[in-house]
Length: 129
Image (cartoon, rainbow, N blue to C red; front, side):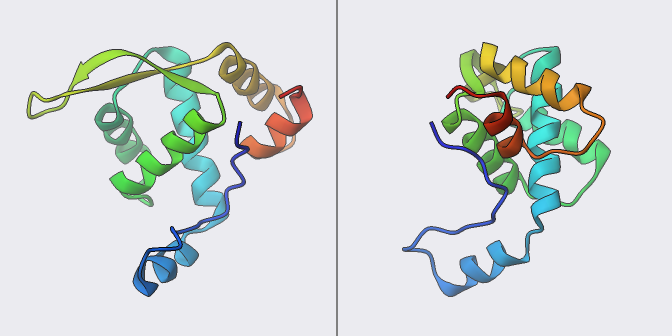
């Protein structure tokens, strides 16, 4: 299991422009995107497009690619899982995502805290892994 750190990164094989773009993303933006994903999936399963469409109504500070990256980090952390097939706006098949039991625990922990915490901190504080 990987713990999301909210540190923007690029692949070692990516060009300098990707690294420059990654360093321009704020940790707060990354954590907010992860919180939006957890909030939505706490309600019901969503596709990546549906997550992004809802996120776009809330704020417009992260790209579709960035949102997919955050979703993948939550997947790698074991907080979400594919729960079936959805359709994109163009009619293509895609994954629908839902929270795992661990994802529900982390969501509830974050939601019930009076102090702000990151997803990574919540995973660490609620252990075990």
